[in-house]
Length: 172
Image (cartoon, rainbow, N blue to C red; front, side, top):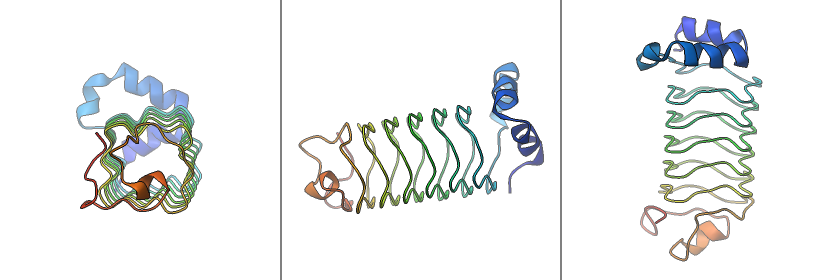
């Protein structure tokens, strides 16, 4: 469950949240804990969630455009139909995350762990998946092209279908 102080600050707005994160960097070792937070349809455009715990959070239909999600733990989070256009997800833990129908246009997914993630119907136009881990990631009906899918990428991933661990453990 999300810690109440984190939610109270977040409810105050993106500007207040980002200022708090910059003003109190020593607190960041313990905060923010947004595990299982319900942020359904939240307007989080430009939010700084770097390093946050958002495991199992409900971010369905949330506006996360231009968000800093670098090294954020989003395991098993619900990001269905969320807008993550231009978001920074560098080295984010996205294992088992549900991105069905999400907008990931121009998102930085470099070195992100997308193992078992569901990207069916997601818009990955211009997204950078260089060195992303794609074990058993579902790409069915995903919109591409994306950066970082090299010649060694399984044909399934290039065509928008599932990439299995046995076929290709990671993008080089």
